[in-house]
Length: 91
Length: 376
Image 1: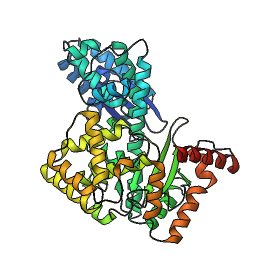
Image 2: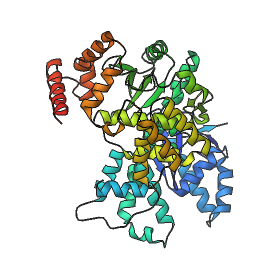
Image 3: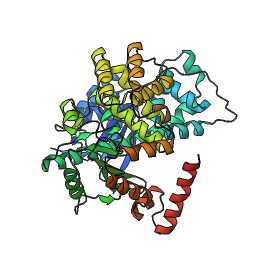
């Protein structure tokens, strides 16, 4: 996965916010995952249709971190979500 | 009320009660288990989380971190179940739309999507639907159980004992979803004909989160139904769960003066004044709400003329007798009696969770439980 990729969330994946966490459910296989507050914010931005680059921009504005750190974290989370089929790479 | 139940009710109601409880005897696991039994894990968790955010407040400091974490862990399961039910509800409603079958979602299946701040806050063990007729219920059941749809029909105890069909689907090893398809609002001749489908639909509300055709009971009907549902549970020995009482508390909190008047009028017209007052007062006692005086007075006056004594809802013998008397003909009464005494094997196996037991042993268990109730 590259930061230039646009990711989409498949129809069978649902998410629900519980406090600062987000719980994600893959209806296709019935498994669910929890994202911490930072992961939940990244998910929210992806759900709004933002590309990974846009997500990084938004996170830079909201968190006191370096560009390098945020790009690494966003790419890592994106890859983890892709590996679990919770997102797919769209055009 | 036990200490744990009092603590849960106070927590859910928004006022974190004095801590500590008797922590030598009550653990976090005990509290979570009790909350699961009462159907209020997510509600309690939301309050605990809010208390932690209000750092510095007396309530926050008192609550152990371990307890908050135990509830946070438990709520994930609730959220998972809630999301699965939401997805299934949408699928079900889409199937109904394709078949041109109209219906109303009932109880938690509807309340979760408009009365509660988030759907997972209302624990729901199944999806309850009300359809206009038995015929449409049979049609929906047939479509749900068709090849590929994933459901299996399970038996009820008889069409005079329960005006519903049940369909079940195994979602995962641990999770089974049940769809209860009703064609009358209540599963008892005592209340079954209190409202027609058309009058309920006329005052129904949209549930946009579940799709364009999704509808649930209006506020007042939802409150009346919750009181009736509670009465029927009490009549079969199922005690009040905090989630049912909280439904009533939420509905009462949303009532306008016009809603209160409509509720009083309908309660009196439909002969439900006693059942309604009993339910609302039970919810009020659990969550610290007084009924408006004029409402209480009007209901008290009306219930004196009613045939059902709402003070005896938990009296199994009395409620069975009243149900029997509510049936309009001897033929129906005898058929009801037969269905009560000799339900199907599949129904009993599901009821007692003994899928592989024979009919004779299941009936022995049934008679044992009946004798216990008659003797109490």
